[in-house]
Structures are given as C-alpha cells and as structure tokens.
Image (cartoon, rainbow, N blue to C red; front, side, top):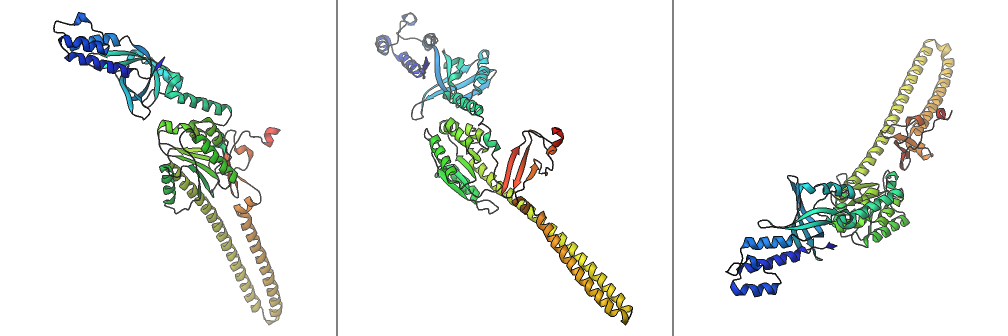
Length: 458
C-alpha cells in the first residue's frame, strides 16, 4: 500500500501529545480522552502530569511500530560518513508543501542506492519523486525521521523516467533514434521554420540574438506557433511540423522551448512527438529547457542545443561558414584568372619584341629585301594574332572549365572526406567513415556502408 504522507497526521498527533504537558491534576485526563490519546497511568506521578522525556519515550514506542511504503519527493540530499540525509516533502495541488519530514539511509543500507541506479539508470537526487519503504523513528532530541530501507524503482520520477526509457527502446527498435543524424544540413538555408510559442521568452531571446549578430546577416525565419507544454503539446507540435512539410518553404526545422519544470518539459519525451521529429525529411534542430535538460526529442534530433540562445549562435556560425567557403572559391578563381592573364601578357610582349627585332634586321639588309620582309612581317603578324586569339580563347575556356560551379552545374558532384580533401578513387574511403558530396546548390553528408573497387571485384 502506497501512502501519500500519512506522516502529516502523525505530526499532528505529536503536537496534541505535547499539549498535555501543561495540563495538571484532574484537567489532564478529560482533555486526553477527548484527543483520543491513551494515558499510561503507570508513568504518571501524583501531580497528574508526566515528564517531557517520558512523553517522548511513549511517542517513540508507539510511532516506532509504523512501517510502510510512502511516496515522497526529495527536496534535498547530502551524504556524510557513508550515511545519506534527505529532506522529504509532499506538495498539494497548488504546489505548496503540504508535508515535510527528514529521511535517513544508513550506511548499512546504502546498497539500495546502487540497486536503484542500476534498475532505473538514474541516481537518487533532489527533485525526483520516489516510493520508499520507510520505518518511522522518533528520537527525544532530534525528533521524528523516516529510515528508508528500500526504494521501489517502478515509481521513479512518477513513472516518467520508465516511460522515457520505453520510448527510447521503441524508437531504437524502429531504427528512428539516429535517423536524423543522417539528414544533411543545407549549405545555406534560405528559410528556417521555428516551432515555438510566440510570446515565449526563449523564442524572444532567439530572435534577438539573430538580429543582433555582429556580421549583419539577415535571416529568414517563419514562426509556426504551437503549445510547448501540457498534454496537448505533442499534438500541437506535430501539427506545426506537418504544416511545415506541406508548405515546403523552409530548409530546416528549429524547435525552441525555454526553461521550465520537469512536468512542463515532459511532453518532449512523448513517443508520438519524437517519432514525428525523427521521421521528418527536413533536419530538425532542438533547443529545449536549461543546460541540465536532455529529452528524447533532443536524442532524435539532427542536432540539439542546451538553450535557444546557443542554437542562435549556431545559426550565425552556419551562415558565417557558408560565406567563408564562397569567398574562398571566388578568391581562388580570381587568382587563377589573374595568373593566366599575366602569362598571356608576357607571351604577347615576347612576340612583339621578336617581331620588332626581325623587322630591324630586315631593314638593315637593304632596300631589295624591304618588300619581301614587309610581306613576311604582315603574314607573321596575322598568324601571331590568330595564334594569340586562339591562346586567349583556350585560356578563357580553361578558366571557365576550371570554375567548380560550372562543373557542378553540369551534374557532376565533388566527393570530399572529413578533412576537406578531394576523394579521387574508391580506395580513399573506408566503411564506416563519413564524407560529403558537394553539388552546385549544397552538399550531402554521407556514410560509407561498403567499399568496392575494381581490384576487389577481381
């Protein structure tokens, strides 16, 4: 039987017993009878009252017989000398503390902590609700305490953690837990879909951080409002996700939720919601709760971030990285073009010098050779000009052919390993390694499942 803090009644009874200390003579017995407390006449003296120590010993004897399973929330917890000291509470519907007691796990029973950790995957800590087997003890000086002898793992964190584990196992069996990890991020997203509450502080921080970026980037985001806590939250977020994919205007999905209590964020462990996020054709990036929070939605996402502000930083860096790559390609093309032009100018200068020398040599031979030399010079100039035109045209064609964007627009792709090196043959990659396929409009992030070469086929 699980009791939701019957200890409150014990404390009230204790308070009534303490009231009898001030009663004297004939007034003590009637008041005691009214309160339902049994008098032990063996410990009363002729004054009609008992000593405080005797009363506390009486309380200790009666309370010590109570042992049961109790549902408690751990408010605080500390260890000292191998013993574990806890403050246990129960809250009412309004969230106020309705009952409070001190708990003890003695060193001789500390094995229940390791057993609890192994069975639930969680350490006993402040903030969780558990069901414990407790014996009530009463000390004349230190008062009442619960000595915990066992912990029921089936009720850890209000069964929420067990449901979370079941969700993870189910998604793993369905091969959805890591599916988003293989969905590539676009090279430069044109529009980002944001699922959040319009008036949420986390969403406001995200937008403010984007707009105040130091590079002056202008981001295109579209908000898809949804309920971000409560029982209706999973269905609301799934509906927003379906709308995003139906419209097809955005390149990635961002799920934002600022900090909150454990109950507020439990919806992000919902199976149906996590399955929808994992199955999305778009990359899903999550930023849910505080630094300490980690939910199943974070596990199935393409990438997850601790806070909405951290996600905003990533988006800025995303655009910055794309800009750097574009600038590097443009700079390479410009350098190659300038080098070809310098080479052409040097060739023209050499040819002109050769022509001038030849002309002077012909003049010195005499008037008889003038006509023939002029004819040869004209022919040589025309030929050289045509050759130069051909060379220039060839250089222009090579420059255009060397333009990576032109090659990629023709349908080719460029394979690049994780270090940014071009992969020119199948043997340059191994099974299990990741690489990227660059297209003219973005890239794919891929994983090598198997390597087959012409040599291995033979």
